[in-house]
Length: 300
Image (cartoon, rainbow, N blue to C red; front, side, top):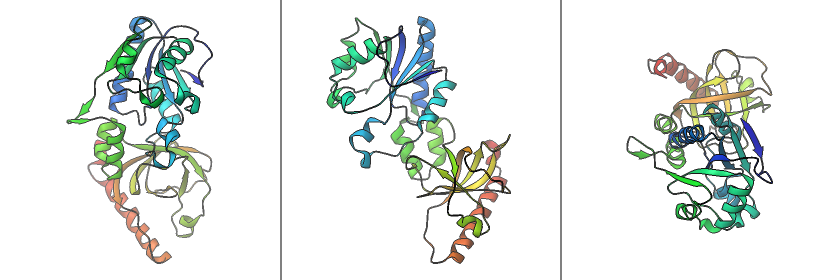
């Protein structure tokens, strides 16, 4: 998969293109990517994705923007796994935000990307003030073909990034996983911390995240990236996410790990002293071990 960080000055050929943030790459996004690669194969063109960093909502109102469901790297990994040939990562800035819909079509889609077949969602909006929509694109169909993707629903609910965030915030990991089509996970590198867990008898891995996570609390988790098989543990997600990996005490600073969130144990709490905190950590670890010993885990 070829990755373009920024828009090229001009296209080097025709592409089949879809456009969006693809936050979380949920079931709706997966359906779009499947249709994209199918059409690209039929047309003999590369399957291409145009996405944005930062997401437009972060550019316009960073403090009020919703938490990200996936990192840019995570999205790219999902694109590659689903057969995307090219990804264009456009920096969303004042210039891009100010383009009129017609300018976006002429300059970005046609001149820079060479789009000849375009797939968008039915509610797609673009251009300055979000004034461009599906009908705007269809008026430009002399230059390229346009197809609208219908909403994908799961158990009667629209698969959307908002729905996934709502489920995660409520601690409903099963519902979030159903909308995603997989277990929700966060990835990051293990960083140095205050070593508090080690002093309490529970060595922990501090995971460095660039953005605020979409869930909070204490969870039973699986950790990938530290061996041939995933490891079991308990994670506390708050200001500084940490993971206590069961029966594991190796030095792993700088290693990139993927943490799957399987079951919520409790919400975050404050404790009056270190002794109370230590007792609660013992209970958390015991509950997480009980979860992994139960019959539900075998079905995951």
